[in-house]
Image (cartoon, rainbow, N blue to C red):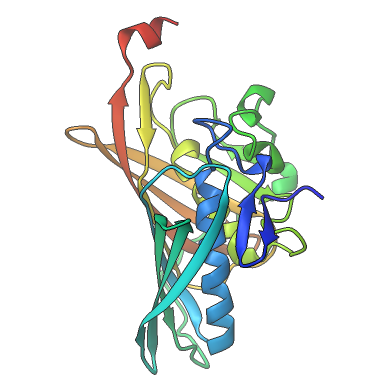
Amino acid sequence: MTAIFTPEGPLFRATEHAGGPWSPDMLQGSATTALMTREVERLANASGFAVRRLTFDLWRPAGLRAFGVETEMLRDGRKAKTIQVRLLDSDVEIGRCTALLTAQGSESPADPFSKDAGDAAPETGAPPPAFAQKWSRYFQNVSVRLIEGALEKPGPAAAWMRLDVPMVEGESNTPLLQAVQAADFASGVGQIVDMREWTFINPEISLYFFRPPEGEWILIRSRTRAGANGAGLTMATLSDRKGPFAEVLQAMTFERRAAQAQAS
């Protein structure tokens, strides 16, 4: 069965389907963040608290290896809890997730200033060009339907995404896992540069939830700003069929490609 990770005792071994855009032997960021989120969601469900913020620091490239996951409760409050999840390659920490969970109330106020318009459904969108779908082995297992903009052209865009294989073999992908794996593509969806001339990376990503996501399809509406000294910021809104449910921020670093690479 096709899956991104297969359980191996207490570890999770990345399969060839986890390969990212920089090298087929290195994990897609969506895989690392979703694997850590799986542990956050388990703890949130056990406590009855809601996931409100996920901040990921992606410290080192991760190969197609077996990874361990360690958790620690940093603060166990009555109204808010802070959890830390570490992703380990043997004794080497690859990345870390800090999660904020909050107690769930019985009701919420109405928002009279919300002007969220309904988005076109994924069934109305268009798939990206075939070459774009081949940007990574992982991405080939993601269904994409564009409703605004284009993946292969610079500028803001909006795309529905759905991971079509299990993140972990034998398990169903929850809406939260679908949201987190989709969020990693925000910088690509809203990229603003000619990728023959520039590279860009995001060593971190943060998601802020104001309600739980629902369903399989996640809409990313993304835009990027370039600043000074190679810095940038990608901002995205995540929606499901009912409307927006989270905001995403990614700190970006831009580097100009060498002249020889541009000419090739």
